[in-house]
Length: 368
Image 1 (cartoon, rainbow, N blue to C red):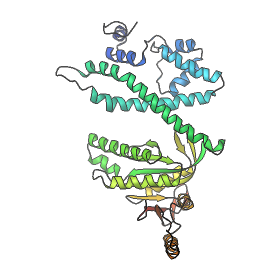
Image 2 (image 1 turned 30 degrees about the vertical axis):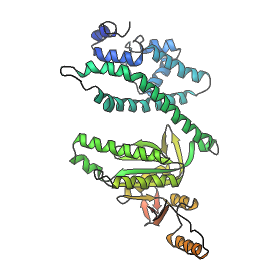
Image 3 (image 1 turned 120 degrees about the horizontal axis):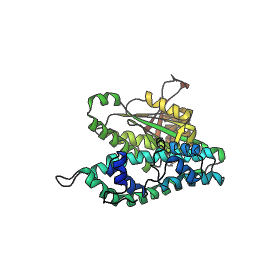
Image 4 (image 1 turned 90 degrees about the vertical axis):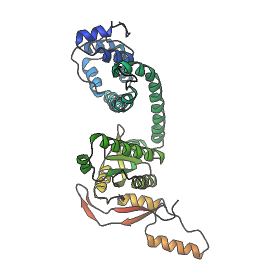
């Protein structure tokens, strides 16, 4: 049984099952294989227990389907590969499930975005009388190999960058618990906007914010961890990089009249990384600092400020910077050039973290 235009094969199966024939044809085109197995048959063919197969499928984000004949040879091969990695001792069973979950979550979001934003525009009927469904199949047929190749290319690039960061870690412990600069950037008054703006207009604003933030984070050497509609979370290996990103975000958004004000909170310290996400007290502190930051301003914690001072990206105080400039002028030398300024703010209790002393981060006049 093959996918074709004759109305047989999966189309006939769709008629029997009540499923949309075009949806089945698209599934066959994308998966490159026909439905042949129930979950039990697929697990048995892959040589794994039904329990383990169910754990893998759920981790990848697929719903339970009972014993419907809905799986393909590709599903069997995927199970066999994951189980083979466990049998060979390359991955523990728990790690294999994590691989399945991280891959499933990442690609699910990518697939949703491509269908909602990308294919929706491309499959507008080009001629009166044509339906979207009549256009979708040939478009997907043309795009599929190109998108697949591009996905593999980007994944390899990202894998190479991530592997490079890991091998530079000082020790095995640092590979999981690392010292990073973490920043949250948050749109001010977003909840009020949701009540005033139309859904389409609100969606465009969120997309513009996320796109701008993602571009600035990447261009300046940071890593976008995740976006949460009105908020983005990013990380950088050093405080100077994170500080530059934060100020560029503020400066860029301030010049866009369509955007609300932005506030950023950052912290520096040990961070636990899992499945591309970051956790720990440092992340929580950055989030709390964001919630108390003034509009169009950046707040950092004491550890972040100390790191900027240590790397000579910021002076310990403006008085010290003035003294250094005067001493350099007296000796006929160039004074130190600092990129950032730090102003200690009021101490205040932060829920769950005790009393913290935020610092206001600014760009110094004449900084490169």
